[in-house]
Length: 163
Image (cartoon, rainbow, N blue to C red; front, side):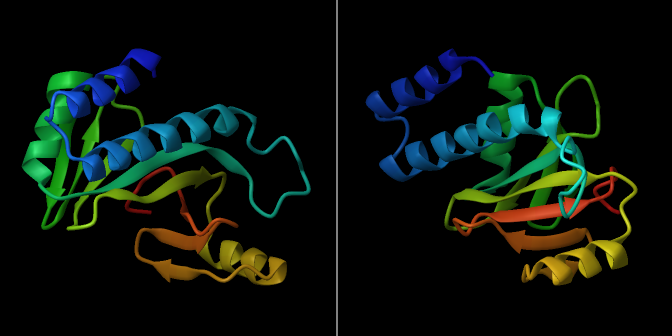
């Protein structure tokens, strides 16, 4: 992601097109993406880690209006909606790789969670390893969730988000 994108968000705020809350939410999402992606390439270098992340799977944002946000990401980043169900949708770039942006309708916009793909994902084994490491977690249909030291929600799953 280029720094110009952050400048565009700030410019929208300065023109009154975004509220302060929207500014913070969008910059948080951008910051989370920029912070996570460089580390994903080095994930798994330490053979002693609890899990072996293959790479970033997706980032999930809470947004007030799904259609408005989907249109924003389409118009300004060329992303397209590839799945919609109830109060959430997934948008992908043109490469159609496994990584995506998930948008959830929520009255409190901001980062919902970010997810890593785990090599040879076995939910039972992941639960065992997290338990052994003393990490509280919850298992849901789409993966296993736990908090990082700052309370940010991390999801781990297989390469398929349905996995």
